[in-house]
Image 1: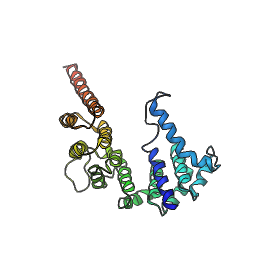
Image 2: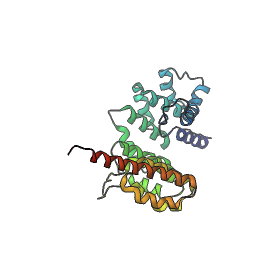
Image 3: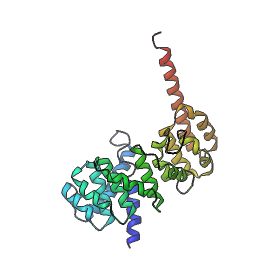
Image 4: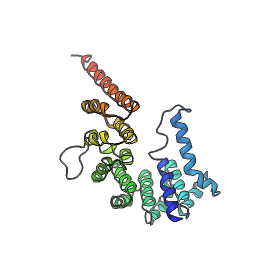
Amino acid sequence: MRLLLIVLFVCAVLVISPAIGATATQPDAPGNRANDAARNRIIAPLIAAGINIDSNEAVINALSNRNLLIVAGAIFLIAERKEKLAIPELRKLLGSEYDIIRFYACKALAELGDKKRVWRILCIGLLQSEESIVSLRAAGLLAVYGDYQGWPIVLRGLQKENTVFEASLVAAPFNGKTPPGEETPISVIGVTQEIFKQTNAEGQLALVTLYSKVAAEDDLPKLEALAAQTKSKGITDDIQRIIDRLKKEAQDKEKAKEEEPK
């Protein structure tokens, strides 16, 4: 039963990560409706348990609940509301026996600006978690805050078909950065060209979503080569849209230079 709860907890948290609300501004956009549905799923256990989700005090108290899904919903609401009064209770979760709970406590504390930054020390430890989802998420969180030591974990994740989706969600902050012990900046598109060719359509779609966040003009030759290696026309079209955007940005930049006063 405990193992089942952990699995359910992971699934629930994955639904709302990366951050909900990152879609278009149109109130009725499909992405926004999906975000609303995801938010409703993550807070549903609190409502079912009779917890008043409009009360910050009740939500903070829910962090000590034995039901992991309730804890997940409480962490989400606290991070969403930037409720700094929850910091002491979140720190207690850093000692949880479950790596996934410890990670999301780290994430919430980081987002709340916890000055003690104990979360960072624990997050570094979570890079060694036996749960790949935790180690990848920990690497990604550290990268967001300027620590790139988790790159080897993300690189391994990107290069394996069974973890490429999860790794692609956290890889963007590493692009163009130089991790400890390395001499050259990371090219996310460069290091994933082979796995793109080998992975299935789902993996390719995950990588294309990543490429849309990190692609620069220098990546055009790589993207044009990958466009011929896709598993579906839809993915080819997605890559072409990135290529078209980069070319337009380059043209606009060149035009702006020509229009500069001499």
